[in-house]
Length: 202
Image 1 (cartoon, rainbow, N blue to C red):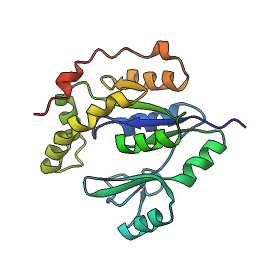
Image 2: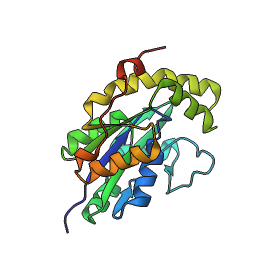
Image 3: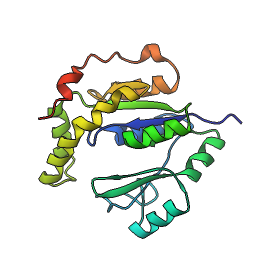
């Protein structure tokens, strides 16, 4: 059995990468999402083992000590990590594995797995990103301000990725990612976004 493809999706918070990852897994056969571990509390509707493995800080620290993570990072005061075993098992089974992680984790995994395919998802504008963060109703106003402040810094790493997809239209963005997974790069929309304006600190 041929090992699967490792596809990494990264984006600033609120750009829609998690929704795109779930839609990709739901619409494409043989695609599985690697479920990360985190020390943060579940958001409304999230399920243990489906969205994340929700663990205590002590459990997370023990996993680090046992070298069970292929990558881990501290983000907004919480820890996130990708378990080595879960990725290896899925790839060995011939699954195409999607990782929904930040740019730091993407950089680390790309170093370890050069054949991994990396995609950075950009919002169509800062206004759209802010509207999505507010609209999902999961963060306090203070947290939204902090996420917006960090978004420009996170998005500056888009050049490190193999592909860039703009989530201006969900169905079109999903089609772009499916085309990347299928190596049909001619079907991926060109990026016409004014990226310098998007990256301005405001």
